Length: 102
Image (cartoon, rainbow, N blue to C red; front, side):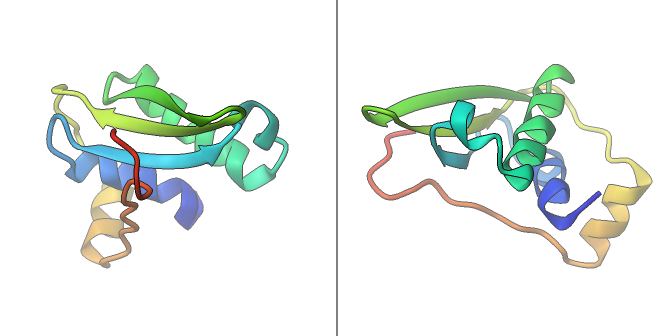
């Protein structure tokens, strides 16, 4: 798991229900050809499939969207790997882009 992939999982484990994070700005459908973006989007989708986050998008302008995750109320059980990452202080926190009403 790369640092970029660790961030969504760590965020989901530490976030409180209702917390939000913008994980991409642009057009995810066309931006997915970038390997890093595809892996990041896949990681957020995995967390959504587990019921830990709800994925939403908001149009900023034509062809440009803010993609964000909202922490669900489902409890998270952190695997050993995530506990180790948290213990080492390797946590990346993203904040919503300016002007977004997430």
